[in-house]
Length: 362
Image 1 (cartoon, helix red, strand yellow):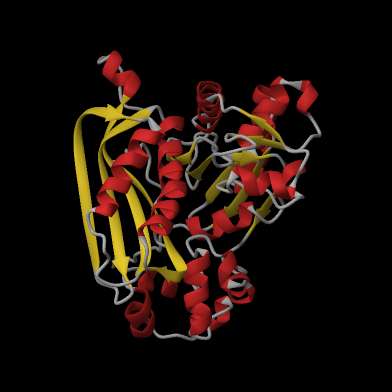
Image 2 (spheres, helix red, strand yellow):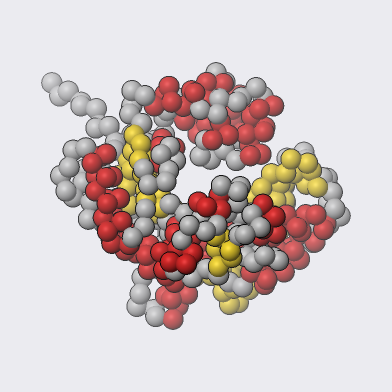
């Protein structure tokens, strides 16, 4: 008689660099160390791409309009981004990860999931692997990293925030469900401010509140995300660490607290979305040929408009112009707008276009 043995509990590490862009700038320019620093934007316009911890104490954070950031922190120093340097440092970090496991899923230049259930070092304890990785990153790059260790991706991601900066935390299978129950849903990875507000209207403010709702209720009110929310409320996340994931598109969207009726306010809301997706493309040295704008109305009906150009575009002003033109094509809006989204697709690696023998690296 064959007895099926259960699969081993997965060991997932989420490594997240601390204030990555800003820390690189402070590493390379000692005069900036200890000072409130914003990478990207300027005092007059633009959006903050990253903020140092000194700036964060004033409430400055990424994706914040530069004007707002300067108002919160009058002494804020703006530094232009150097994405080529960030990519080089990210590659150094990736090479360290590869010493331990081939199962690496980068989320951006500064964070990644690692599955170390079976690892190249034959180490049994994931917390010790995380300690070694963080120490090597510090030795090689001079930068601090934080890490979260758990049995699934959701909890590893949550754990990496617990002891930031320059720390790590573990959430065990025994402690996972209780940890989720006690946590405010607004702190859940994957639950943005608008979703948290919608959950609050349904009486959901903690993981325990979320756990009390049946799957049918969550699917009715949160669509495809309902099953995901149902699982994580119980500390369950079956998503695998996917190595060498290649993005076919990159998008961002925002649900508004108050619906929008007029074109100019709607255009204003497009700009930070474009900046977010364009920043991803710039950090990964890719460009897009297709721009898509998604419009969701107050009755949850939606429309999409797309434009494809002959050559890849990466200039933010060109992308904004296309996105605004697409949005204007559905104005006057048939109903108030509750959500806008921008997606860039038909992605091309710019370096690969110049040197065809190189593989697409994301």
